[in-house]
Image 1 (cartoon, rainbow, N blue to C red):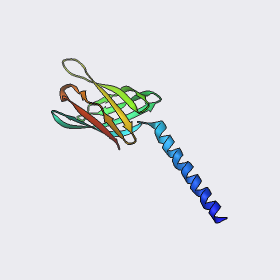
Image 2: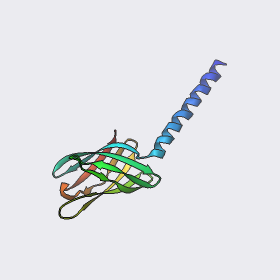
Image 3: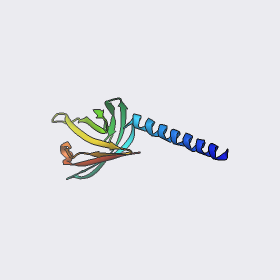
Image 4: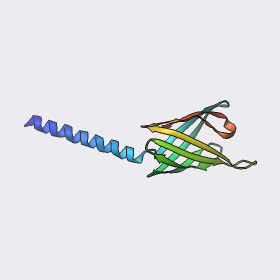
Length: 126
């Protein structure tokens, strides 16, 4: 009798853990992230808040110095693509990002980041 209860408890725990994992997967990229760009100008760190609604990606990125920019993008499975538009005296500078979500990390594809230069980026969930 005790063995059955233990087996039932273990099964319930597994179902609960699977439910948490599934809920996290459904939320996908939603949450607070720290982004790190590695370019010719050095390493730049930004704070991001992503909001996923199905295949749509929104949110904002804090570049520091009171510069908070909107995120406009998409999520397709683990792949995400988004753009931020940096205001500049010579005209707005769009910066495009592409990356792959894996748990609490995003591995970004190499890109061109306006005056920051070219390089890589990555993000980790906070």
